[in-house]
Image 1 (cartoon, rainbow, N blue to C red):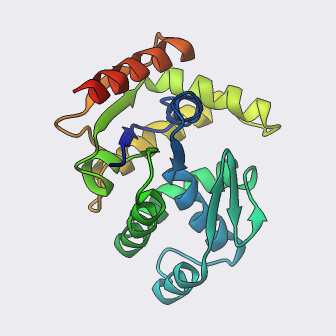
Image 2 (image 1 turned 180 degrees about the horizontal axis):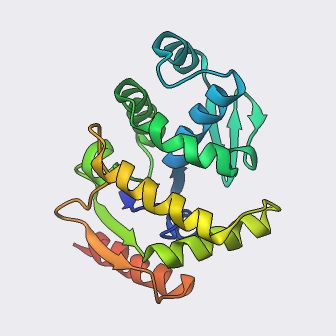
Length: 219
């Protein structure tokens, strides 16, 4: 029987960093659903496809191939790990992910990727929509100011220029969009465990989540 660990939360809450490390420690398949939506956004930007171009978006979805290999993301056999993390793609991903038929396609792909495997999956609707019956549900959160600081730090490591005030503004706007959108809004599942990472180190967050997973596996 496969194990499904769902990690949800807003941008910059530490989902990606924490989930990758836990996947290695607990021998779980890591699935970054946010990266999948970023791939759609990148492809639309590259082909100059607007949010209202329904037919063109559907064509992209029909032809797209997304592969997740560890921390690397491949779009139609092209490594786009860095391209999907630019500010432009980040800002475009939220409205793209709010499109109903885009989410339907991505949920279908996410469930297929996880089938029959022990997985840890992070995103915004994993515990509520993709896997409402996940074995473990975690909702990671942190204050917007701390999330903005982390994003600036992450961008600097990746050689991406960024401005703290602008990123903070973008994060607050994205939270609002994600939490109020009609399709699969970002919210804590009723049975998810809240972990506030604002004042915690990465190691402290990892230890806390691993303890939750291990306790669940003992039940």
